[in-house]
Image (tube, rainbow, N blue to C red; front, side, top):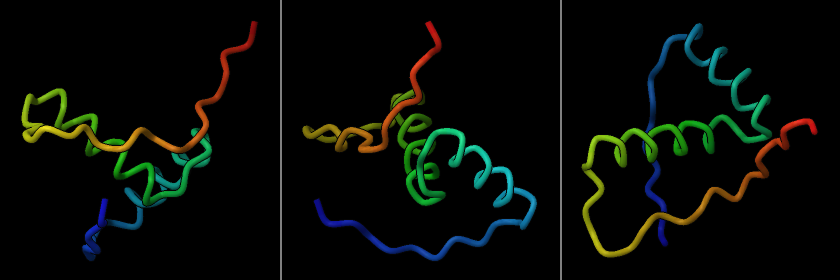
Length: 65
């Protein structure tokens, strides 16, 4: 799947929050933004098309046993 580059302007405070969240989930900020947007689009029922997006390649932190 080809990816589209898109400049994003967000506040430094929002970027810092995304950066912390991405680090907690072992993702880059870019991957975190894409993950959150994909979740939001699916929850809104706006995902159109036959193919599902590629699964998130980042590892998911394991819950302690």
